[in-house]
Image 1 (cartoon, rainbow, N blue to C red):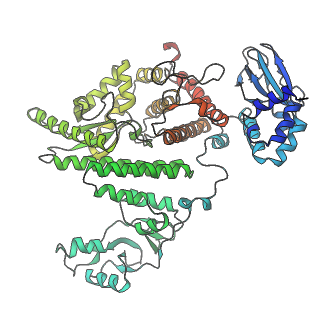
Image 2: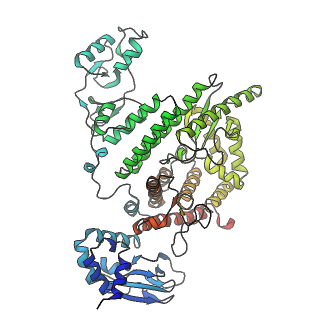
Image 3: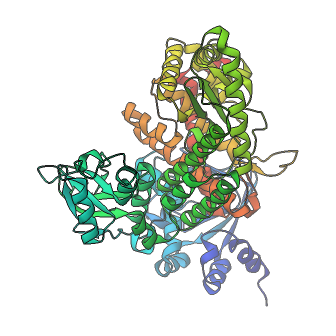
Length: 639
């Protein structure tokens, strides 16, 4: 006769990890031996120090809270809802319980027999790994470095460098041809011809590399008549030399060529210019190793003359991102490469716009990138957030100068829109005269935001405090940054109000750990990962780093890593925050790539149980961080 109860248990188990990866025969055996436990609200299933049960448990319906003990005010360790596994200690450690399980509401629980389950773990390695991870997450300090790495690591634990072409050591040209800095240019040209090479390493009297001379240098400097072929090589060489270690990976080499805007890297024994050169690495070596490279796209960006060319390159960058992402290249490497390419597109857009202006800029200026671009966190294509600051001018010249930069900004924003970056819905772009101002105007603006904090001012502060110079004069930006930090000195109310604003972000989870979704509008029933998870982490990192007066670190994960240095007592916790930030960005990017959108709104029914579990671990970190912010900046009385 058919066992209908066992069939129902089987149908339920197969939907949730780790039971979803167990073969049918073994899962049927488990289902036939499961016990069903009904718990009234407040009923204790097991207590701290109780002798181990013969089963571990899975929530079928309702909710079970795990606490330190039975007391009403005891610390809550976890809340388990449908599909969550708990009570694993007897299976993993074979000793007494170290927490208490209480039904937070009427609940139905399946008891999985340990003696039936253990043989399955022995032959199904992944099943055991999942249960150990679940057990660890409910017992260990979630802010320890090891725990954070387990949950927020950038790549799978079983990933090996030989499995990924991009992580292999790149091949380069060995036994490079060198020339003395005092040798004549004509000798260098003859040597390049004799050895059939396109570049030479220039060395000093100790044979240490100090520069490079290439066939391009001869075309631009000697053939054009700018320099005589009789000048010393040091007069036409490129310097300083870019040196790197010999075991450079393909991706590291790619990033180095992009960052240094160079077609050549000199390989030395220890990676510095204090040891002799042992090889040369070129863009050609990258192309041979990988084909369509980031450095190749960078060159294409610099050659582009029209927005449509940049748009095509941006689409290629999106494909490059997808390739990197689904090969599990470490996130920090992906982020650096994509940021450099995005930055280059913005710079080229500004250069094209300047070429269309009737005259050169009347005074010094700088283009500021804001938001996720300013934080170097923009992987997917989003809308524009930018501003422009120009040098102070006499009052009689102000209107004409302002008009020039407003027109320039409008052209840049229009080009970027054609490339694929949408206009900001709130018009927080440099084309808006409010965000195209002189240095003194910007100083006054920031001072107003800091000293007269209103709701709208806090919103602007959260965006504009993350500015990053993309193009233009460094000194203008440095002076602006200095004035901001000076204005925040001895201003505790500013940090309190900023903290209050950060704490008003919508919560990601309800009391029973269910994901809170949008209740109405276009995104009804979807989970907003930006507003409910990424923004709280970003906002609180900004507040903490500003309170420490740390300049020039805008990236959220890097801010938490810096905080770990500044506050050793909270090191593990801040590292967990850093890993959480990376994990959430990675999660959003993954879903954005799958659905060809910004990845902001998530369909919960598409998430696996493992994905939900990992997201909830990130949310726990956010919850603890909010408590720190409340206490440190005395926000409690204002909420």
